[in-house]
Length: 428
Image (cartoon, rainbow, N blue to C red; front, top):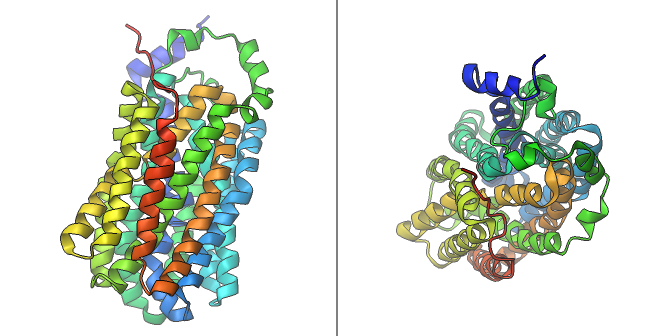
Protein backbone atom coordinates (compact mmCIF):
# COMPACT_ATOMS: atom_id res chain seq x y z
CA UNK A 1 0.00 0.00 0.00
CA UNK A 2 1.27 3.46 -0.88
CA UNK A 3 2.06 5.87 1.90
CA UNK A 4 0.43 9.31 1.86
CA UNK A 5 3.54 11.06 0.63
CA UNK A 6 4.22 8.68 -2.28
CA UNK A 7 1.81 10.44 -4.66
CA UNK A 8 3.61 13.70 -3.93
CA UNK A 9 7.00 12.18 -4.76
CA UNK A 10 5.64 10.70 -7.96
CA UNK A 11 4.11 14.03 -8.90
CA UNK A 12 7.34 15.88 -8.24
CA UNK A 13 9.36 13.42 -10.34
CA UNK A 14 6.96 12.63 -13.17
CA UNK A 15 4.46 15.46 -13.55
CA UNK A 16 3.52 18.95 -12.51
CA UNK A 17 2.27 19.20 -8.94
CA UNK A 18 -1.43 20.14 -9.00
CA UNK A 19 -0.65 23.03 -6.67
CA UNK A 20 0.71 24.92 -9.66
CA UNK A 21 -2.58 24.38 -11.49
CA UNK A 22 -4.37 25.84 -8.46
CA UNK A 23 -1.93 28.77 -8.44
CA UNK A 24 -2.66 29.45 -12.11
CA UNK A 25 -6.38 29.44 -11.41
CA UNK A 26 -5.93 31.77 -8.44
CA UNK A 27 -4.09 34.19 -10.75
CA UNK A 28 -7.09 34.09 -13.12
CA UNK A 29 -9.52 34.64 -10.26
CA UNK A 30 -7.60 37.72 -9.11
CA UNK A 31 -7.40 38.83 -12.75
CA UNK A 32 -11.21 38.91 -12.91
CA UNK A 33 -12.34 39.72 -9.37
CA UNK A 34 -9.91 42.59 -8.80
CA UNK A 35 -8.07 43.31 -12.02
CA UNK A 36 -11.03 43.61 -14.37
CA UNK A 37 -13.78 44.59 -11.94
CA UNK A 38 -11.81 47.21 -10.01
CA UNK A 39 -8.93 48.38 -12.19
CA UNK A 40 -10.84 48.09 -15.47
CA UNK A 41 -12.77 51.08 -14.15
CA UNK A 42 -9.55 53.11 -14.24
CA UNK A 43 -9.35 52.79 -18.04
CA UNK A 44 -13.08 53.18 -18.66
CA UNK A 45 -13.52 56.12 -16.27
CA UNK A 46 -12.73 59.11 -18.56
CA UNK A 47 -15.18 57.99 -21.28
CA UNK A 48 -17.80 56.95 -18.75
CA UNK A 49 -17.52 60.28 -16.93
CA UNK A 50 -17.98 62.17 -20.20
CA UNK A 51 -20.95 60.06 -21.34
CA UNK A 52 -22.85 60.25 -18.04
CA UNK A 53 -21.80 63.87 -17.28
CA UNK A 54 -20.38 62.90 -13.88
CA UNK A 55 -18.56 65.18 -11.46
CA UNK A 56 -15.24 64.10 -9.97
CA UNK A 57 -17.03 63.40 -6.70
CA UNK A 58 -19.46 61.08 -8.50
CA UNK A 59 -16.62 59.17 -10.15
CA UNK A 60 -15.12 58.65 -6.71
CA UNK A 61 -18.50 57.55 -5.36
CA UNK A 62 -18.78 54.91 -8.10
CA UNK A 63 -15.49 53.34 -7.11
CA UNK A 64 -16.42 53.64 -3.45
CA UNK A 65 -19.65 51.68 -4.08
CA UNK A 66 -17.52 48.88 -5.55
CA UNK A 67 -15.38 48.92 -2.45
CA UNK A 68 -18.37 49.10 -0.09
CA UNK A 69 -19.65 45.93 -1.74
CA UNK A 70 -16.26 44.37 -1.15
CA UNK A 71 -16.28 45.62 2.42
CA UNK A 72 -19.66 44.23 3.48
CA UNK A 73 -18.88 40.81 2.03
CA UNK A 74 -15.26 40.24 2.89
CA UNK A 75 -15.57 38.74 6.39
CA UNK A 76 -18.44 36.47 5.40
CA UNK A 77 -16.54 35.23 2.36
CA UNK A 78 -13.66 34.06 4.53
CA UNK A 79 -15.95 32.36 7.04
CA UNK A 80 -18.01 30.66 4.33
CA UNK A 81 -14.85 29.47 2.59
CA UNK A 82 -13.51 28.05 5.86
CA UNK A 83 -16.75 26.16 6.50
CA UNK A 84 -17.84 25.06 3.03
CA UNK A 85 -14.64 25.16 1.01
CA UNK A 86 -13.22 27.90 -1.21
CA UNK A 87 -14.16 26.33 -4.56
CA UNK A 88 -17.93 26.92 -4.38
CA UNK A 89 -17.61 30.38 -2.82
CA UNK A 90 -15.11 31.48 -5.46
CA UNK A 91 -17.28 30.26 -8.33
CA UNK A 92 -20.42 32.01 -7.07
CA UNK A 93 -18.42 35.18 -6.48
CA UNK A 94 -17.20 35.24 -10.08
CA UNK A 95 -20.77 34.99 -11.36
CA UNK A 96 -21.74 37.99 -9.23
CA UNK A 97 -18.73 39.95 -10.53
CA UNK A 98 -19.79 39.29 -14.14
CA UNK A 99 -23.38 40.31 -13.37
CA UNK A 100 -22.22 43.55 -11.74
CA UNK A 101 -20.04 44.54 -14.69
CA UNK A 102 -22.81 43.70 -17.14
CA UNK A 103 -25.29 45.84 -15.21
CA UNK A 104 -22.85 48.76 -15.11
CA UNK A 105 -22.88 48.91 -18.90
CA UNK A 106 -26.48 47.85 -19.52
CA UNK A 107 -28.33 50.74 -17.88
CA UNK A 108 -26.64 54.09 -18.63
CA UNK A 109 -27.54 55.96 -15.44
CA UNK A 110 -25.53 56.93 -12.40
CA UNK A 111 -27.81 54.98 -10.01
CA UNK A 112 -27.58 51.77 -12.03
CA UNK A 113 -23.83 52.17 -12.30
CA UNK A 114 -23.64 52.44 -8.49
CA UNK A 115 -25.64 49.22 -8.14
CA UNK A 116 -23.45 47.45 -10.70
CA UNK A 117 -20.25 48.59 -9.02
CA UNK A 118 -21.61 47.42 -5.66
CA UNK A 119 -22.41 43.94 -7.03
CA UNK A 120 -18.96 43.68 -8.59
CA UNK A 121 -17.48 44.45 -5.18
CA UNK A 122 -19.61 41.79 -3.47
CA UNK A 123 -18.48 39.20 -6.00
CA UNK A 124 -14.89 40.41 -5.84
CA UNK A 125 -14.64 39.78 -2.11
CA UNK A 126 -16.41 36.42 -2.41
CA UNK A 127 -13.87 35.19 -4.93
CA UNK A 128 -10.62 37.03 -4.18
CA UNK A 129 -10.32 36.46 -0.42
CA UNK A 130 -10.93 32.67 -0.51
CA UNK A 131 -8.68 32.35 -3.58
CA UNK A 132 -5.71 34.04 -1.91
CA UNK A 133 -6.24 32.15 1.34
CA UNK A 134 -6.44 28.88 -0.61
CA UNK A 135 -2.73 29.16 -1.35
CA UNK A 136 -1.99 28.49 2.34
CA UNK A 137 -3.44 25.01 1.86
CA UNK A 138 -1.39 24.23 -1.26
CA UNK A 139 1.98 25.78 -0.29
CA UNK A 140 4.07 25.29 2.84
CA UNK A 141 5.43 28.20 4.85
CA UNK A 142 8.73 28.24 2.94
CA UNK A 143 6.92 28.88 -0.38
CA UNK A 144 3.85 30.73 0.84
CA UNK A 145 5.12 34.28 0.30
CA UNK A 146 6.28 33.49 -3.22
CA UNK A 147 2.99 31.76 -4.07
CA UNK A 148 0.94 34.65 -2.73
CA UNK A 149 3.13 37.04 -4.70
CA UNK A 150 2.36 35.11 -7.87
CA UNK A 151 -1.35 35.05 -7.06
CA UNK A 152 -1.74 38.82 -6.82
CA UNK A 153 -0.06 39.05 -10.24
CA UNK A 154 -3.53 38.54 -11.68
CA UNK A 155 -4.10 42.26 -11.22
CA UNK A 156 -1.03 42.96 -13.36
CA UNK A 157 -2.39 40.73 -16.11
CA UNK A 158 -5.60 42.76 -16.04
CA UNK A 159 -3.69 46.02 -16.48
CA UNK A 160 -1.82 44.52 -19.42
CA UNK A 161 -5.12 43.44 -21.00
CA UNK A 162 -7.23 46.53 -20.29
CA UNK A 163 -4.49 49.06 -21.06
CA UNK A 164 -4.72 48.55 -24.85
CA UNK A 165 -8.14 46.79 -24.99
CA UNK A 166 -10.30 49.56 -23.52
CA UNK A 167 -8.92 52.39 -25.74
CA UNK A 168 -9.42 50.14 -28.79
CA UNK A 169 -13.04 49.43 -27.84
CA UNK A 170 -13.68 53.12 -27.12
CA UNK A 171 -12.30 54.08 -30.50
CA UNK A 172 -14.32 51.43 -32.35
CA UNK A 173 -17.69 51.95 -30.67
CA UNK A 174 -17.61 55.68 -29.98
CA UNK A 175 -20.19 56.95 -27.49
CA UNK A 176 -21.24 53.41 -26.55
CA UNK A 177 -17.66 52.21 -26.16
CA UNK A 178 -17.66 52.44 -22.36
CA UNK A 179 -20.74 50.18 -22.22
CA UNK A 180 -19.23 47.64 -24.63
CA UNK A 181 -16.07 47.67 -22.52
CA UNK A 182 -18.02 46.48 -19.47
CA UNK A 183 -19.66 43.72 -21.52
CA UNK A 184 -16.26 42.54 -22.72
CA UNK A 185 -14.87 42.41 -19.17
CA UNK A 186 -17.97 40.51 -17.98
CA UNK A 187 -17.49 37.94 -20.75
CA UNK A 188 -13.86 37.38 -19.76
CA UNK A 189 -14.98 36.87 -16.15
CA UNK A 190 -17.50 34.21 -17.20
CA UNK A 191 -14.69 32.27 -18.89
CA UNK A 192 -12.68 32.34 -15.66
CA UNK A 193 -15.76 31.18 -13.74
CA UNK A 194 -15.98 28.06 -15.90
CA UNK A 195 -12.30 27.24 -15.39
CA UNK A 196 -12.45 27.78 -11.61
CA UNK A 197 -15.64 25.75 -11.17
CA UNK A 198 -14.19 22.81 -13.10
CA UNK A 199 -10.60 22.65 -11.91
CA UNK A 200 -10.12 24.30 -8.50
CA UNK A 201 -9.58 21.96 -5.54
CA UNK A 202 -9.85 22.92 -1.87
CA UNK A 203 -6.85 21.01 -0.51
CA UNK A 204 -3.99 18.78 -1.69
CA UNK A 205 -5.50 15.69 -0.04
CA UNK A 206 -8.23 15.70 -2.70
CA UNK A 207 -5.51 14.86 -5.22
CA UNK A 208 -3.52 12.58 -2.91
CA UNK A 209 -0.80 15.22 -2.47
CA UNK A 210 0.99 17.21 0.21
CA UNK A 211 1.52 21.01 0.02
CA UNK A 212 4.42 22.26 -2.07
CA UNK A 213 7.44 23.17 0.06
CA UNK A 214 5.95 21.66 3.21
CA UNK A 215 8.50 21.34 6.01
CA UNK A 216 9.00 18.24 8.14
CA UNK A 217 7.48 20.02 11.14
CA UNK A 218 4.37 20.96 9.14
CA UNK A 219 4.06 17.42 7.80
CA UNK A 220 4.25 15.91 11.25
CA UNK A 221 1.70 18.25 12.80
CA UNK A 222 -1.19 16.44 14.40
CA UNK A 223 -4.38 16.24 12.27
CA UNK A 224 -6.37 16.39 15.50
CA UNK A 225 -4.68 19.64 16.48
CA UNK A 226 -5.35 21.08 13.04
CA UNK A 227 -9.02 20.13 13.27
CA UNK A 228 -9.30 21.69 16.70
CA UNK A 229 -7.62 24.90 15.63
CA UNK A 230 -10.07 25.18 12.73
CA UNK A 231 -12.87 25.69 15.26
CA UNK A 232 -11.02 28.23 17.42
CA UNK A 233 -12.43 31.39 15.83
CA UNK A 234 -11.63 33.41 18.93
CA UNK A 235 -7.91 32.97 18.38
CA UNK A 236 -8.34 35.04 15.22
CA UNK A 237 -10.50 37.86 16.54
CA UNK A 238 -8.59 38.23 19.82
CA UNK A 239 -5.19 38.45 18.17
CA UNK A 240 -3.47 41.78 18.78
CA UNK A 241 -1.06 41.03 15.95
CA UNK A 242 -3.96 40.70 13.52
CA UNK A 243 -5.38 44.12 14.44
CA UNK A 244 -1.98 45.77 13.97
CA UNK A 245 -1.77 44.23 10.52
CA UNK A 246 -5.32 45.33 9.78
CA UNK A 247 -4.41 48.95 10.57
CA UNK A 248 -1.45 48.77 8.20
CA UNK A 249 -3.70 47.22 5.57
CA UNK A 250 -6.11 50.17 5.99
CA UNK A 251 -3.28 52.55 5.09
CA UNK A 252 -2.48 50.56 1.97
CA UNK A 253 -6.12 50.39 0.89
CA UNK A 254 -6.69 54.11 1.33
CA UNK A 255 -3.54 55.21 -0.49
CA UNK A 256 -3.11 52.79 -3.38
CA UNK A 257 -6.76 52.96 -4.48
CA UNK A 258 -6.55 56.73 -4.96
CA UNK A 259 -3.51 56.31 -7.18
CA UNK A 260 -4.85 53.38 -9.20
CA UNK A 261 -8.40 54.74 -9.63
CA UNK A 262 -7.48 58.21 -10.91
CA UNK A 263 -4.20 57.37 -12.66
CA UNK A 264 -5.58 57.55 -16.22
CA UNK A 265 -8.00 60.37 -15.39
CA UNK A 266 -5.13 62.50 -14.02
CA UNK A 267 -2.89 61.83 -17.02
CA UNK A 268 -5.57 62.66 -19.59
CA UNK A 269 -7.11 65.56 -17.71
CA UNK A 270 -4.09 67.30 -16.17
CA UNK A 271 -0.82 65.90 -17.50
CA UNK A 272 -1.49 66.23 -21.25
CA UNK A 273 -1.59 62.52 -22.10
CA UNK A 274 -3.90 61.13 -24.80
CA UNK A 275 -6.20 58.22 -23.94
CA UNK A 276 -4.00 55.89 -25.95
CA UNK A 277 -0.85 57.23 -24.26
CA UNK A 278 -2.31 56.91 -20.78
CA UNK A 279 -3.58 53.41 -21.61
CA UNK A 280 -0.14 52.42 -22.88
CA UNK A 281 1.50 53.61 -19.66
CA UNK A 282 -1.14 51.78 -17.61
CA UNK A 283 -0.32 48.63 -19.58
CA UNK A 284 3.38 49.14 -18.87
CA UNK A 285 2.59 49.47 -15.17
CA UNK A 286 0.85 46.12 -15.45
CA UNK A 287 3.80 44.50 -17.19
CA UNK A 288 6.37 45.68 -14.68
CA UNK A 289 4.10 45.00 -11.70
CA UNK A 290 4.04 41.32 -12.64
CA UNK A 291 7.29 41.00 -10.69
CA UNK A 292 6.07 42.89 -7.60
CA UNK A 293 4.43 39.94 -5.89
CA UNK A 294 7.32 37.58 -6.69
CA UNK A 295 9.91 40.12 -5.61
CA UNK A 296 8.46 41.06 -2.24
CA UNK A 297 7.12 37.58 -1.54
CA UNK A 298 10.67 36.27 -1.96
CA UNK A 299 12.10 39.09 0.16
CA UNK A 300 9.59 38.29 2.91
CA UNK A 301 10.37 34.56 2.79
CA UNK A 302 14.07 35.32 3.25
CA UNK A 303 14.22 38.42 5.48
CA UNK A 304 10.78 38.55 7.04
CA UNK A 305 7.39 40.08 6.24
CA UNK A 306 8.09 43.17 8.41
CA UNK A 307 11.18 44.14 6.46
CA UNK A 308 9.34 43.68 3.17
CA UNK A 309 6.45 45.87 4.34
CA UNK A 310 8.81 48.68 5.36
CA UNK A 311 10.44 48.78 1.94
CA UNK A 312 7.14 48.56 0.10
CA UNK A 313 5.49 51.44 1.95
CA UNK A 314 8.59 53.61 1.59
CA UNK A 315 8.62 53.15 -2.18
CA UNK A 316 4.87 53.55 -2.58
CA UNK A 317 4.79 56.69 -0.47
CA UNK A 318 7.50 58.19 -2.66
CA UNK A 319 5.57 57.21 -5.79
CA UNK A 320 2.31 58.85 -4.70
CA UNK A 321 4.01 62.05 -3.52
CA UNK A 322 5.98 62.36 -6.75
CA UNK A 323 2.81 61.88 -8.84
CA UNK A 324 1.13 64.75 -7.01
CA UNK A 325 4.14 67.05 -7.13
CA UNK A 326 5.15 66.70 -10.78
CA UNK A 327 3.22 66.56 -14.06
CA UNK A 328 6.48 66.43 -16.02
CA UNK A 329 7.23 63.30 -18.01
CA UNK A 330 10.15 62.20 -15.84
CA UNK A 331 8.09 62.54 -12.66
CA UNK A 332 5.14 60.62 -14.07
CA UNK A 333 7.29 57.76 -15.36
CA UNK A 334 9.38 57.52 -12.19
CA UNK A 335 6.23 57.46 -10.08
CA UNK A 336 4.71 54.76 -12.28
CA UNK A 337 7.91 52.74 -12.05
CA UNK A 338 8.05 52.86 -8.26
CA UNK A 339 4.40 51.85 -8.01
CA UNK A 340 4.92 49.04 -10.53
CA UNK A 341 7.68 47.49 -8.44
CA UNK A 342 5.46 47.34 -5.34
CA UNK A 343 1.90 47.38 -6.71
CA UNK A 344 0.37 44.14 -5.44
CA UNK A 345 2.91 43.21 -2.80
CA UNK A 346 0.94 44.15 0.33
CA UNK A 347 -2.05 41.82 -0.33
CA UNK A 348 0.43 39.01 -0.99
CA UNK A 349 2.30 39.70 2.23
CA UNK A 350 -0.93 39.87 4.24
CA UNK A 351 -2.15 36.57 2.79
CA UNK A 352 1.17 34.94 3.66
CA UNK A 353 1.08 36.39 7.19
CA UNK A 354 -2.41 34.96 7.76
CA UNK A 355 -1.10 31.52 6.91
CA UNK A 356 1.97 32.05 9.10
CA UNK A 357 0.01 33.19 12.15
CA UNK A 358 -3.22 31.19 11.97
CA UNK A 359 -2.62 28.13 9.79
CA UNK A 360 -4.23 27.03 6.54
CA UNK A 361 -7.71 26.32 7.94
CA UNK A 362 -8.14 29.68 9.72
CA UNK A 363 -6.32 31.76 7.12
CA UNK A 364 -9.50 32.61 5.12
CA UNK A 365 -11.27 33.94 8.23
CA UNK A 366 -8.21 35.91 9.36
CA UNK A 367 -7.66 37.39 5.92
CA UNK A 368 -11.35 38.23 5.71
CA UNK A 369 -11.27 40.19 8.96
CA UNK A 370 -8.12 42.06 7.99
CA UNK A 371 -9.56 42.82 4.58
CA UNK A 372 -12.65 44.29 6.23
CA UNK A 373 -10.48 47.05 7.69
CA UNK A 374 -8.56 47.30 4.42
CA UNK A 375 -11.91 47.76 2.67
CA UNK A 376 -12.76 50.72 4.89
CA UNK A 377 -9.65 52.46 3.62
CA UNK A 378 -10.48 51.55 0.02
CA UNK A 379 -14.06 52.82 0.29
CA UNK A 380 -13.00 56.10 1.87
CA UNK A 381 -10.09 56.89 -0.46
CA UNK A 382 -11.83 57.44 -3.83
CA UNK A 383 -14.67 59.45 -2.29
CA UNK A 384 -12.30 61.85 -0.51
CA UNK A 385 -10.11 62.11 -3.61
CA UNK A 386 -13.12 63.10 -5.73
CA UNK A 387 -14.25 65.68 -3.19
CA UNK A 388 -10.72 67.13 -3.00
CA UNK A 389 -10.48 67.27 -6.81
CA UNK A 390 -13.80 69.12 -7.13
CA UNK A 391 -12.76 71.58 -4.42
CA UNK A 392 -9.25 72.25 -5.76
CA UNK A 393 -9.85 71.50 -9.49
CA UNK A 394 -6.97 69.00 -9.40
CA UNK A 395 -6.27 65.46 -8.26
CA UNK A 396 -2.72 66.42 -7.23
CA UNK A 397 -3.62 67.14 -3.57
CA UNK A 398 -5.34 63.76 -3.34
CA UNK A 399 -2.14 62.02 -4.46
CA UNK A 400 -0.19 63.95 -1.83
CA UNK A 401 -2.65 62.75 0.81
CA UNK A 402 -2.21 59.19 -0.44
CA UNK A 403 1.57 59.47 -0.11
CA UNK A 404 1.36 60.80 3.42
CA UNK A 405 -0.97 57.98 4.51
CA UNK A 406 1.27 55.33 2.90
CA UNK A 407 4.32 56.60 4.79
CA UNK A 408 2.73 57.41 8.15
CA UNK A 409 0.10 54.68 8.52
CA UNK A 410 1.62 51.93 6.38
CA UNK A 411 5.30 52.51 7.04
CA UNK A 412 4.87 53.74 10.61
CA UNK A 413 2.62 50.82 11.47
CA UNK A 414 5.11 48.35 10.00
CA UNK A 415 7.83 49.76 12.26
CA UNK A 416 5.68 48.75 15.25
CA UNK A 417 5.50 45.10 14.23
CA UNK A 418 7.60 42.43 15.91
CA UNK A 419 11.06 42.10 14.36
CA UNK A 420 11.52 39.00 12.25
CA UNK A 421 7.76 38.55 11.81
CA UNK A 422 7.09 35.96 9.13
CA UNK A 423 10.75 35.03 8.68
CA UNK A 424 10.88 31.36 7.73
CA UNK A 425 13.72 29.12 8.84
CA UNK A 426 14.86 27.08 5.86
CA UNK A 427 15.80 23.52 6.80
CA UNK A 428 18.87 21.79 5.56
